[in-house]
Structure formats: C-alpha cells, structure tokens
Length: 334
Ligand SMILES: NC(=O)C1=CN([C@@H]2O[C@H](COP(=O)(O)OP(=O)(O)OC[C@H]3O[C@@H](n4cnc5c(N)ncnc54)[C@H](O)[C@@H]3O)[C@@H](O)[C@H]2O)C=CC1
Ligand SMILES: O=C(CO)COP(=O)(O)O
Image 1 (cartoon, rainbow, N blue to C red):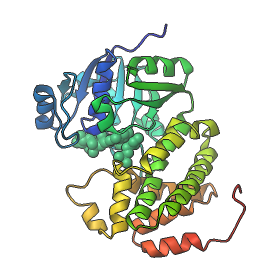
Image 2: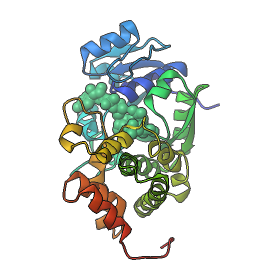
Image 3: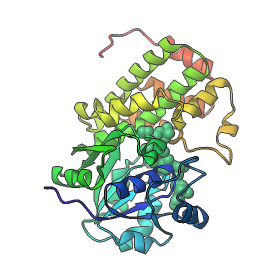
Image 4: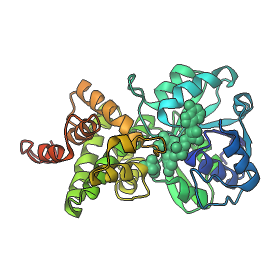
C-alpha cells in the first residue's frame, strides 16, 4: 500500500488553499494552513468560515492555522496555493526552512509574467531541494470546500511520488489521478484560464451558443499546440487537467476567468475589473505570456492573441471577433 504524507501544510489561505486544506483534513491528514491575514485566519480557526473567499460555507473540519512560515515548512509535504505571480516570492521566503526532498504540490494555475516560467520552473529556481508536483483539474474551491465530488490530476516526476500524493489527498469526494507529465498538467491549467476569458466575452456579448462551442474547440486546439510544443503529452491534455478543466471553466459563471470575460463582453471597463475588490483572474496575466511563448516557438494562437490584445486595449472586442472570423481558411487539423 502507498504510504501517505501525514503532516501537510497549505500555503495560502484564499479560496483554493482553504478548500484544499479542508480536503486534506477530510483525507485524515494533519493539516496546518498558512496565511498572512491574521483576522481571516482567526475566523477560519474559531468560526470555521472564510467569508471573503468562501461565502456561505461553514467548514465541516477544524483547521489549524499559522502566520509563521517556519512552522509551515516543518512538515512532510507542502501545498503552495497562492496566485501564480506570488509563487517565486513565497518559495524564496520559505527556502531556508524546507528540508531536502520535501514534496511541494503547486496548485496555482498560471505562468509567470516577464520570465514566462511555469510554476515547476519557479520552484526549481527557488526551492531546488524540494520535489515538485502539480495538482490541477476541474475543481471549484467552493465545491471542494463543501465536500462535493470531483476528480483531478496530480503529476510528479516519479510515478511513486505521484501515487503517494494521490493517497495523501484522496477522500470519498476527491479523487486524484496520478501522472508523471508535469508540463502537460500545469500548461493545461494555466492556458484554460485564457480560453475561459474568451468564452466569457462571447457569452457576455451574446454572440450565441454556436460561437461559444466553436471558440472553445479552436481554443482547445491552441492549448494542445503550445503545450505539446513545450513537451506536454497529448493524452494529458485530453484528461482532467486539460479537457476536463476547459469544459468546466469555459462554461460556468462560477469561474472567475469566465465571469471576468463575461463582464468585459457586457461592456464593463478594464479599470472596473482590475479595481480594489477585483477577484483573481489568472488568465489576465497568463494571456500575454502564452502569446510570447507561442511566438518564440512559432505557434499560432489567434484566440489567446485576441484576448491579450483586448486586455492591452490595442483592439476592441468587435475588432477581435472580426479578426478571428476573417483569418485565412485552412484545414482543421493543420
Ligand atoms: N478558486 C478556485 O476554484 C481554484 C483556484 N486555483 C488556483 O489557485 C491559485 C489561488 O487561487 P485562489 O485561492 O482561488 O485565490 P484567492 O484570491 O481566493 O486567494 C488568494 C490568497 O493568496 C493570498 N496572497 C496573495 N498574495 C500573496 C502573497 N504575496 N503572499 C502571501 N499570500 C498572498 C491572498 O491573501 C489570498 O488569501 C490561483 O492560481 C488559482 O488559479 C486552482 C483551482 C481552483
Ligand atoms: O481552476 C478553476 C477550476 O478548476 C477555477 O477557475 P477560476 O480561477 O476561473 O475561478
């Protein structure tokens, strides 16, 4: 039988970090949740609630919390669950305390701006003594926090480690599948957020269900092209962390990326959407990185390009739609 990692810390007490901490507790693990907001952590510990990120949910598990990174590093396994652009800083802050060989599961779905690094590359640079893993797949934090069922993929460099991590986090409502395709699992998760913004725009602008399905399909082809070029395995992209998460995030208003796009499509301004109470939309950061990577690798990603251009305000949504519809005709599978 695969031995689970018993003592687990979760770095990041937002929606997904808190949901994953609850999930690990349900799996029978000893969990400690690290965050920087004393007040929010206090509410999690004393009232079993996180109103800002998980409204209307009272947790079925008690959670131990800390603001001390040293304590959070003194565990058998770490889950890093803060936004992608913060992974480097947190990995750097904790690096002195993490023991050699500690598995670190990365759950952020994004690519780093400016450096274009995947999360596993960030980890290698700042926490080289750790063993990287990726958790990704169709999983809204609120669903997981409520204990609703889903399945995800956990990738690690060895099958044994991936299986151990799956055994550590699985419970009656959370079914992880093991993989050794770190690139495929993280690229699927990062790129689907860009496509979810595009699909939200189409819905918000009322371009119709046919446009939505066509965009999702062609966007998925783009994801397969870029991720495949970077080394992802095709079967990974057809799995939970690729097709599965595209299906979820591109068709549900529960997705923050989809609803960000929807609001844009309805005519909300970018200034409003990036305002002080803005919800995290990882795709807004990843769009530009995806386009840069595509250009470096000679890959066409017209939908990601259109999202990036709408976000940098170099074109309007109407121009983006017209541009996509007037591209030269070609074979579907080229
Ligand atoms: N919410 C969801 O349903 C899912 C989210 N994810 C991914 O998980 C990652 C985190 O997302 P959420 O938890 O949903 O976001 P969130 O916005 O709910 O929470 C982010 C948390 O990170 C903290 N944080 C931000 N900057 C920080 C810093 N520099 N140092 C320490 N803490 C910092 C915030 O205070 C907050 O507690 C994202 O990459 C997202 O794509 C993945 C799967 C599901
Ligand atoms: O990744 C997610 C679901 O699998 C969450 O998506 P959003 O960040 O768009 O809410």
